Image (cartoon, rainbow, N blue to C red; front, side):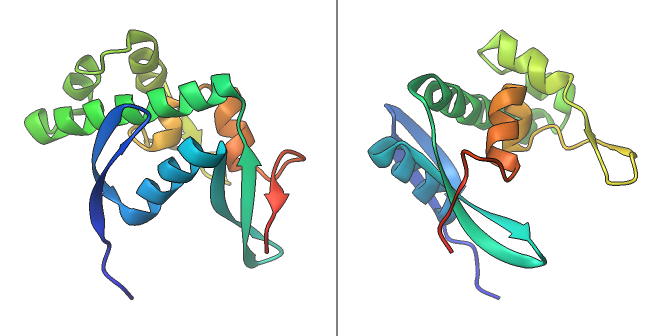
Length: 139
């Protein structure tokens, strides 16, 4: 197993710090081509997909990353989610992530607030996380 390569990347007018290289590449591709590349499991195999985002979705995606960076900075400082939420500049996103709920396949609630998707509007999360007509299979 290879080690994660941690990088900083300047895209969309923001300096994103301490991203793994794959995350940085996703942001660079989004800025250049307007698409997000992802891996999903289908038929017990990992497949690569791409999805083209609308200009509004791109803004939401970038805003989610900015808010997540603020959140992790707060976690480094306080090591407490509620205090970290208070450091998120966009209060709509802060409230969204504060109230985010996720469930396992057997309907048990799990706390994954802090994952990138917890910062996104539900429709964008759905578009990115599910295999749907907007997702284009690459291989």
